[in-house]
Length: 384
Image (cartoon, rainbow, N blue to C red; front, side, top):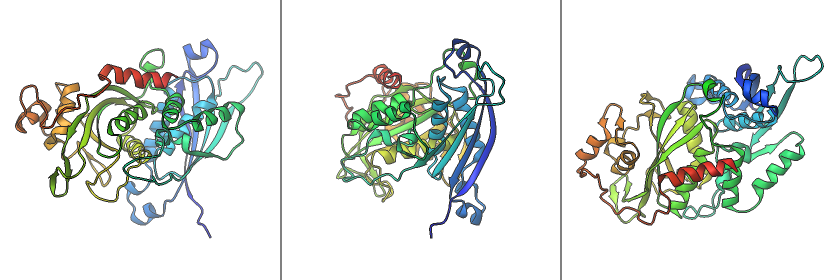
């Protein structure tokens, strides 16, 4: 007999948002209240008494509030969908029920409340047919978890149309649908002043299997399409020799590497959850430490903060010795500093790089998009 899932329930999360179809709702904003009911297995956390084995409900609460205070939507149905996606970005959560209340809704007759409730469940991702040639769509990222949700409530005609559009076409259609479903956050307009605290983070990207450049560009789009993340800069992609447990190994397919600078309202572990699921969506297999991979996303720095846990160490403990991280980082932020290690410029000099900080391997001169073009492309995807 299958064991039923456990629950974490948070009720009454209140924040001011600018959602609604009327101009005054977008301009003035109003109070929204959210309830979230997470279904997951808590047996390991209960047995070990370790926070890392459960879901941090304080972080969940913060992320839900960030969605409410973030990108405005016409419908609270859409707002609920965004909240469900952010919650399901955490791999431990198997199912979530979200209720969004709009107690100040512009209704002409007396009423106490109006709310929308949705339930979304994670669908197990299919294993890639060939690790070297990923077949999963970019739409299957955890940041876009609702694209992978099975619907357990009747759907409106509008939501059915959205699902149909996500299922149509191949990988490119999936990427477009994901970006459309989760628009890039902006900092303009009346919403900006009400956002929760944001943090600048540094994400390193790498791939040595399949179409490396296409994978990295799609990963950037997936990151940019995540609620609560804005991509500020993307470096040039550069080639590097693979590093295995035995050291540099030129017999292994070489990597293409880059760095993305982002601004995020997500907690560090929530950002890590998003990154891990984007990796999974692109066929990442974690069978061998430092083994070949279709996509590798590392959180290098998170607002200069330090953290030491079973899941995450900040800043990244080996970033100071990796020129394929430091060089693209320096390219997009010449004043960058790695906490506890010093200026990125000095770290590169210590590794033997020149003032131009040229990489020891050839640069990927065939890179088709410059920095501004890649960011603009990601944002255009999010606006469609």
